[in-house]
Structures are given as structure tokens and as C-alpha cells.
Length: 107
Figure (spheres, one colour):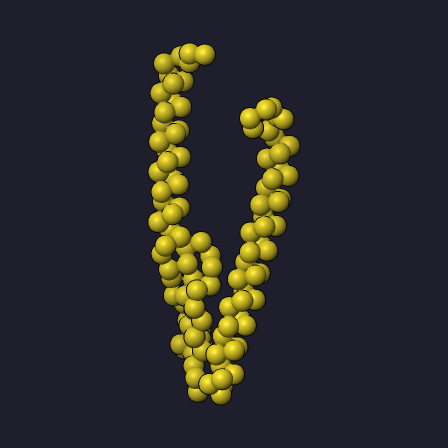
């Protein structure tokens, strides 16, 4: 099926934009940001895809063995919470978009 000229041009632009967005998403995932609280007592590093990569707590606050375990436990809990939040968000958006999109083969 041949599309009118303007529609064909619009589809090409949409495809190009989609490719650019996919590339940008990958670049963002590779980047990280740092944040601190308590005057630098706690520092976190978070990736662009919202995963906690590192947590540092001032060693003067706890015994070194307890500190390592606490940092690991906090990171695991935060990442699990973020994963569940993303999953919940995707499910809720799916409900909305599912009701908007007709049930055609290929969609």
C-alpha cells in the first residue's frame, strides 16, 4: 500500500526520531549521578536507568563489618523497591494504553 507523500515523509521522520530516542536512552543508562546527605555522611551513586549503583556511609558511624553489610542491604532493598515501582508503573500504563489501542493483529 503506497502512502501519500506527506504521510511517507512523516513516517520517516517518526522512525528517525524513534532511533534517536533509543540511542539517547542507552546513553542515559550509562551515565551516573551522585547525591549526598547529612553533610556528606551518606553518598549514593545512581545510574541513568534509576538503579542504585553505590552507597557509602561514613565509616565513623558503624563497625566496618556492619557498615559493609548495611550498605549492601540498603542497596538491595532500594533497587528492589525501584524495580517494583517500574513494574507497577508499566502495568498501570498498560491498562491505559491497552484500552486505547484496538486489538488488531500486529499491535
